[in-house]
Amino acid sequence: MKDKIIDIAKQFKFKGQLINIEENTQGNINTTYLLTFNDHGTINRYLLQKINNYVFKDPYKVMHNIELITNHINKKLLKEKDYKHQIQTIIKTIEDKIIYTLVNEKGETEYYRAYNYIDNCQSYDECYSTLIAYNAGRGFGIFHRLLSDFSVELLDDTIPDFHNTLKRLEDLKTSIKNDVSGRHIKYSKEIADLMTKEKEISLIWQELGTKIPIRVTHNDTKINNILLSTDDQDVIAVIDLDTVMKGSVLFDIGDGIRSTCSSCDENETDKNKIHLDLDLTKAYIKGYLQEMANYLTVDEVKYIALSIKTLTYELAIRFLTDYINHDVYFKIKYKEHNSDRFLNQYTLLEDIEKKMDIINDFVWTTYEQILEKAQLN
Ligand code: GN1
Ligand code: MG
Image (cartoon, rainbow, N blue to C red):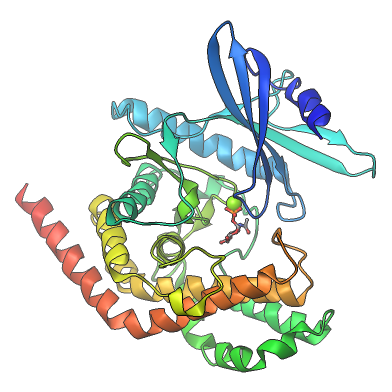
């Protein structure tokens, strides 16, 4: 493997001599390597990634979207003289392409792309302070704000229906019908319960484009997709831009809170430890609204609490569907991994349902406070 990566690295415009290769196993989809180069004493780091083309059917469209939005964000940061926040930069191939392809020994095409590595930053798999939650919320708020004047129609739908929760439910039903593994029996009680929530979890998608504005969204706002400064944990960048498409900010808020404000990470198997931490949730909402309150419509604000429930529900059924389909989508580290991930999100969902009113009240109070303060300034 190492020799293969060394050869692939020669195809990109990296500066210096390759001195180290490290695999990063945080993501559930792509395969990522951190490459270190020595350029006459200067250390340069890059990320080399093999794009999962089972998930991303057209990697060129993915990279095209990323090129457009990173150019836009870079221009805006310069214009606003914001030298603190960053966005990943695509490193092109020696032939000036955004993707390098090769055909492997099985005759399959592999797709590789590279980015600069953002130094002096850290990402977390679990949130352990309100400061981290606040800055994660702010980070995605800044991202939405910077893209608020980008024309959404320029972006391709790289994974159609990605946050169409009702379609995800249909996929679950199909997996149960096809029954390739016999695994769904284990969860008949949970499945019956999930089916009762169909109407509520369809609402956001159904109102997208009418009540809810279509905007540029990240669509994968889990906690480890945000980089915080190693000095003071201030937000520096949003990463993993593969799923940037048109959508609703509610997808990002809901997914961000379910991931960042859970008391545990997605792999925790002790049900008793899993709940939505309200302090973290409040900090996240505050951070997000600090950046975006002025841009949101009242309907968007109204659905924030529902978005947390919807996105948790959605990921729960995605893990369950993949478990029933015998693990074809998410990378697994052990046999029952998707089953454990499902139970984790299902437990979180049960807790979120109990806290909806508290969250909703907090959203409105914070929203009004921020708008009031903005008017006084
Ligand atoms: C995947 O690649 P990663 O780990 O950031 C998935 C997300 C899920 C997440 C759950 C393209 O994200 O939608 O929320 O796993 N990405 C894709 O951990 O399906
Ligand atoms: Mg991802």
